Length: 399
Image (tube, rainbow, N blue to C red; front, side, top):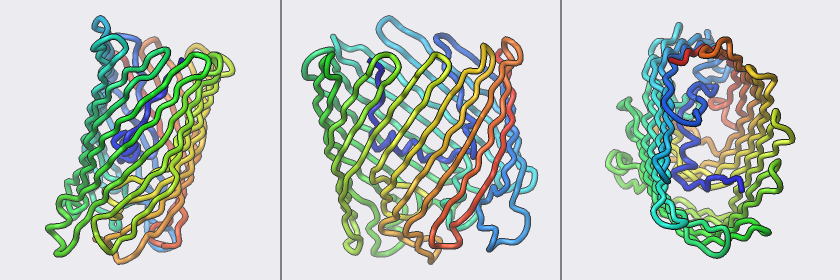
């Protein structure tokens, strides 16, 4: 059966790390061994500051060059497996030089077979990059540093009941002194039980606890008790229908309780769904849907209720080339806005994006590609409304 990863709060928060407008740190994992690929990426963004054109005069576009080294490592040690994916580079901007800074990402995953069907799966993830300017109340150069650690225990069996559990810790910190009040910690614990049967598939019932805290906010603002507790109970069903279709569908009930007495609790239905359809060995289609309560560092909200839809298709054109395209939609509802850097209340917003990319293997060790993306955000607050079109060219050499 094709497996999907169950996202904890820490894993969900991993989707919110500051990224470039395009997937510039995405690299393929080789079947085994070490690969080192020096890569140069050239990005043009029509609105790199994520400002509303109707409110801000002057040039908003910029050209950014990011020389980097991408590294992947994968090795099997008997029954155990280690996978490391990383990229280290530096952004050089032509116009807005105050945004120049490091761009570093690293993710290490291990699968350790401990006994019978039981596996321990530790993961560590680091990401250092310019924070997402669309979420800041003011434009300022700021390195957002994300550290994400998680350990999961899974004793999945081909038939019968089995336990599952996970713990995680996520820390997001900011380099700019004016943004350190937005530093945030998330702690996660999950436990559950699963049942597997070949003719049925797999079903899991889990309970998850999350704690959000901004360690620097309470001391900076007298009387503030920022943070929240989040509780989630749900069921996740997985099934592979022949080799061409694999899917999972989950529903949960979540309740978020802020620490501050003046901020209302929120409860509702959460959704977690994913499907992968592969009608041929050249074409694959991925659908991903998620609704949950979560935190974000630089928005200044105590917590956010967010709904995401993503549809993506990948087409292999030949032995050396491939095409990808898709779109995404995200709706956020901000709860308990602290107004730390702006008097404006965001309340809610919607972000839509369409994208496409092409990759080509020029030589056996030389790869190149291009990507284009259009993104726009709508909201009742003019300051946070924007649209942006970006294009990326890259070339990388395998050593």
